[in-house]
Length: 81
Image (cartoon, rainbow, N blue to C red; front, top):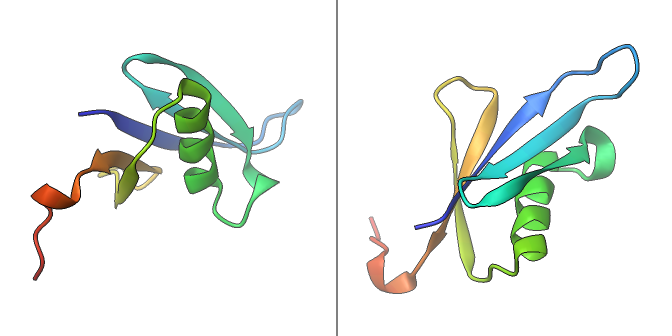
């Protein structure tokens, strides 16, 4: 199962705020924080598109509160409450 994690990178003296998307089998991707209304989703989608991954992504928060986790899901394995 592929998982993409995103984390917020605060602004520095030379760069604005950014979001970094990472996956275990892909190079990280960094996008400008202000590129979209939802920069974490934009970064995750950009990484998936760059790697040629397709499917539905489910989203959840990281325990640290500084980012999100996205994983590909298959409707056959979803539960309805």
